[in-house]
Image (cartoon, rainbow, N blue to C red; front, top):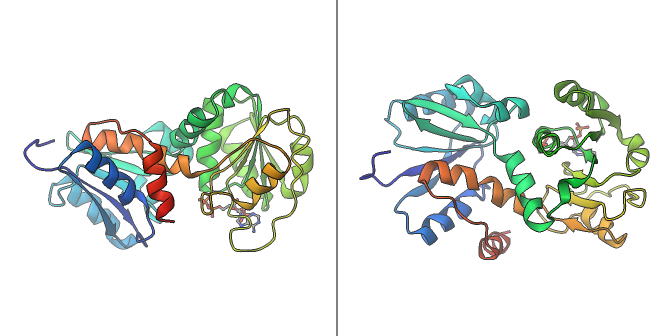
Length: 279
Ligand code: ATR
């Protein structure tokens, strides 16, 4: 990095206006006194390859950035090095320029685990997890759970075929089931993770009985708007410990900031409140 030029980073998406990343990185830049910037870039799919090319040749003067929908998978075709984490998850969310090469990783699995490490130390001491949903977010969660040593990850999805794909992708520790199987899956589970948008559109969420879970079994949701999602509310009402998903958003931003700006930022209550106030 040329130390005389303030470093610039970005979030590239289409649409990008809803991204909360500028708020997070802007806060860290300000509190650390770094004279850099973090900018929203609206980039259509057909322009994305050229953008990455211009970052590489220096005509777009960025040290790196986040890529979001719809570029998270497309970036594989344009980056020089995609790390194993991003390959396993099947999507990248963080890119940077290093010695003339475009590198890419995915920090969502890190963010998921770091959030629970902070609020619920020991969350990963269990053996069995239930994951509701089989989309992109689910893949990051499953990767984190396998890394943290869960011996059995039971994926339940409305469309069972997508859950089967994940069990093929991640191997024998991951089993695939349909939504009808959910009650059986709960037996003895140490952790329940919702990765779907179930109930977010105002529709009713079918009741979930958390009582077959292991004693002290934790329920978490990666959806964070609202903080108390219908699934977390249901778990609370049944006396379960819960963890909301906002921390995952905040923690997944940490590695990118450190790569681009050279300083590891902290996830503080002040930052959390800043994002809540913006919701
Ligand atoms: P993301 O990248 O956020 O995970 P996605 O890839 O679109 O988004 O995946 C959304 C997930 O939420 C899927 O598991 C989806 O189930 P299907 O694969 O059966 O579509 C799940 N989902 C969304 N709305 C749902 C609903 N009303 N009921 C049950 N599952 C739902």
